[in-house]
Image 1 (tube, rainbow, N blue to C red):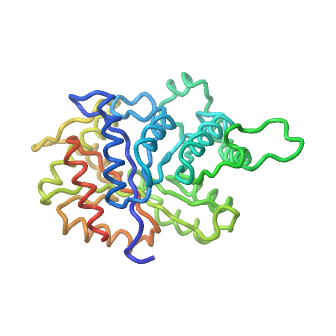
Image 2 (cartoon, one colour):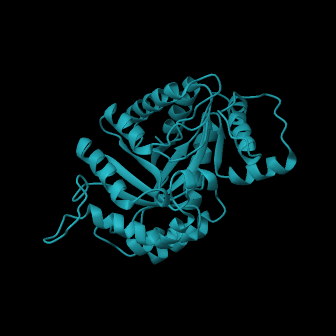
Image 3 (cartoon, helix red, strand yellow):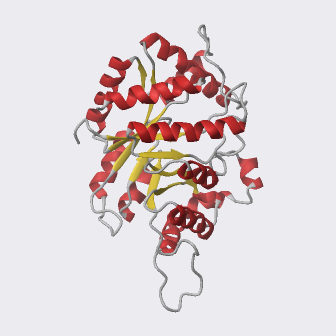
Length: 327
């Protein structure tokens, strides 16, 4: 793959300190419109629950909001956490989105619950869900097929819908499943980079062509925080570092503003460095070199750039610099 990998956006709809959920959702739409103008390929939102700093729990609803306010960019879930949902209801929700926004809807599927045990019980789902993930994916693929004579239950909307399905993963399991089913594969290297290269290799080597996809297709998550200078970008990164530290210490909250003299517990800092090792942080030149190096190392077909920045205008600018880096 050349350095001209496609660029896409993963947005966590961050709720920042001093702002409301409503502002976060409006900012997500604004970022999507901005990304569309800049030539980004797709815009994904992720399902998280019980997280005060993330506004995209009802992921399909936010996708409808973003798709309704844009016109060409693909919009989807990165991802829907399938253990939390009945496959039929996912097919209906995304079938509806596909009817409203034909040819633009993506459905990335994850195996994790995207939350803690207590919240999972509140979602009325049980941890056995992860064990049935492959069967649930196959069932969901079936609901999107055109109905056959004598079929007693069908997804309406959903049956025959044009929804691009993806398997998301942060381990080798997702790579094997995506290869087996002949689906595109997105790896969560932006927060769980450990198995990235092994997962990509396993997926490519064991890929079986399907009606949905003829050749293996890999998208990798990459944190990009870009600013006018390297120092400014480093300062902007401190918001994510603080948010990660708070999460690791069991007190998730809204996203904090940048902090110039940030001091973290060394153990926590080490964990964050590992989790965020697939990151490019800097001014335009450093970002251009960093993205090119990451694509050269991984051979990714597409990069999903994520970069939560406390100040919305600076977040827009960060995505502008990233887009310019591959042009």
